[in-house]
Image (cartoon, rainbow, N blue to C red):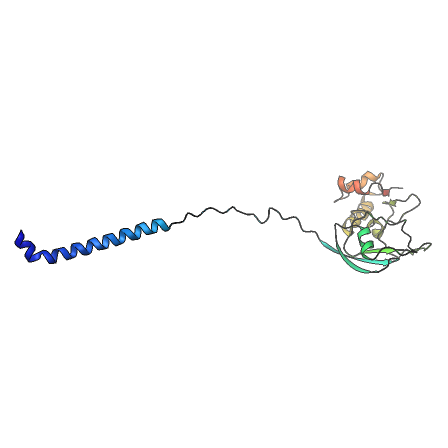
Length: 199
C-alpha cells in the first residue's frame, strides 16, 4: 500500500484535490446566489379607465346683438346660454333679455341673438331663444325647425323628427304626445313641458 502511494500518490491526489476545489467553488456560488435573491413584491394593478369619464363635446356658438363682445365662442355642450352671454362680456344697457332662456343648454352651431329693447325681429332671424307666442310657449303643432330647436334638448335631428311625425300622424293632441316622437323620452319631456303647448 505504501509503495502504491509512493508510486501513484501524486497522480491520484491531484485529481481528487482538483475535484474538491471545484466542488467547493460551486457550493460557494450556490450559497451566494441564494443570498442575493430578492423577493419581488407584486405591484398593485391600476386600471386607467377607473377614473375616466365620458368626454364632453365642444361646441361653437355665435353670440350676436346686444352683448359687449359679439363673436364666436367655444364652450361645451354642458354649458348654458348664460355662460355664452357671460363669455361675450355680458349684456349692453340696451339689451332686451326677457325672451332669452338662460338655462338652455348649448348646441353646436347655435346662434344666440340678443335684441335691443323695442326691436321687432324679422322671421328670418335665427335666435337661440323660443319663438314665444302670447302664452309664452312654443306651439309644437305649428313651430318650424328653427323654432323647435329653441326648445331645450331639441336639436336638428329631433326637430325634423317632430315635423315628420306631424306630417304623418297629424297634429299633437296633447303635449304628452311629443313623447311618441322617436328620441324623445320622459327625461327630455320633463325639461321641455313648461315651454311647449298645442293648439
